[in-house]
Image: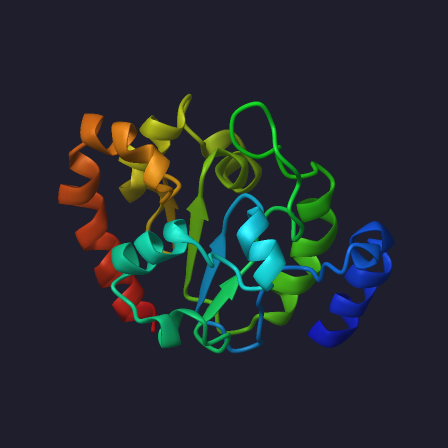
Length: 189
């Protein structure tokens, strides 16, 4: 099956979202060179239908060293959150992505992406799912051990502006990880 057929199945299997006027928020094209796997779209991204259409996306593009045009080119970047729909608000932040969503849809989509050179795992949900027993005990330790996952895979903290405390406590991230991230992205593109 092709990507358009998979997307149609996702839409058909999530009638509750369609009833709200929501489309699945992800991008994928067979020639994508970099896959970004994050948590789930926020409300703003869900409403616009554009992944990372928020301050987190601005920061992520800065981290990657790419323009908006490059980032939103599905021939360069596939953006596959762990859930393609906004999960709703929790007491603090958004609810987690549905547990069964990524295992059902990601393998089928990723099988269609034949040009992938680099995968970025943003946040704990993506890292736990994709690294399984290779993840460290905490997100910080996993991100700090980024070299253990090279080549081809880099775990990242979420680029949310709300993570300013984490970033101020972990200056090694900007000093060590971001230069390697930019170099790996440039090489993959």
